[in-house]
Length: 125
Ligand SMILES: CC(C)(COP(=O)(O)OP(=O)(O)OC[C@H]1O[C@@H](n2cnc3c(N)ncnc32)[C@H](O)[C@@H]1OP(=O)(O)O)[C@@H](O)C(=O)NCCC(=O)NCCS
Image (cartoon, rainbow, N blue to C red; front, side, top):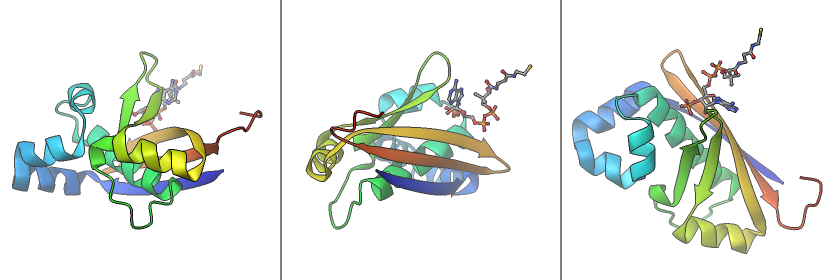
């Protein structure tokens, strides 16, 4: 099992939006993330933290992963789920990781996330 943790300031997200607008938003977040978090930069900060935490848990190394290949979706209960596609899904397969779980928080101008990567074949989870 591997874990990743990351912290992102809402200010940095707002600064990126101000500087690069839609280009930043669409290069970093999926359409579903953008629609679930519209007008809520603190929630985007937590999702950006989740992407970086996932890269730590995946032990990215030199692999280039598009930000949108790691996405956080919200269940109706509010529980976040982490979804990999493309290069991130491929890296997870290479690392023997079956699934990732995440938990998010945002407060005091920061968003944070912890991600746990669970190995394939672990019957205990
Ligand atoms: C789930 C809960 C613990 C979140 O607490 P919180 O302090 O408001 O949450 P934070 O601000 O730290 O974090 C928010 C994130 O929690 C996550 N979250 C929300 N609901 C969740 C759930 N059911 N399960 C897991 N994570 C959840 C989300 O990712 C959310 O961020 P997002 O909206 O950007 O996706 C809270 O909503 C809750 O259910 N509390 C229980 C209250 C209760 O039962 N009280 C009984 C006393 S009588």
